[in-house]
Length: 108
Length: 120
Image (cartoon, rainbow over all chains, first blue to last red):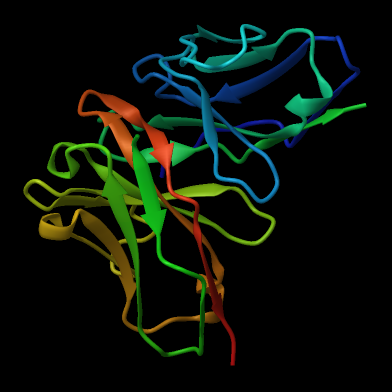
């Protein structure tokens, strides 16, 4: 079955830039999406179609794509950005969706 | 305002059946796919499947095919997830979510989650 691979954890100091990667063979063909999940809360979409920012999401959140890897970048990280981040996409046919394993962002 | 309101927490015994629900409001329910996502304790998100209430077209993740049933009742704008025989390993938080558009593969609105606990 199709898989998306993320690093389990990323740590940054406040004000620094955090980059979270997500790799998958079908990413050149299928868009990737990023969700933020804080403890006890439902996920929230922060990036769609690789690099678009939904309404209400701070400008410090951005996304990019290169080949089989997509990257979520958080510039000027704030304490409130500490959360789990999940990439999500679909297999090459677009029939089955999949989430990455998630990355815990720690703000030191 | 778009809302997905899920049914309350459940505590069940192994072997029991269960149906949890997700009621949509603030949008035309029959025009949007509704999906289900599992999150086991301390673990990540898992896509279970998705249904189009307009015609009940349903797709399941291979990991969940045959393990659960996804259904929808468009007359009451409600999607459901059911089990015929629960296992302890079904203990998890279950989220419903709305597919943003028919041409994009992501969720834009999520329910608050339903915690299912299966224990003898």
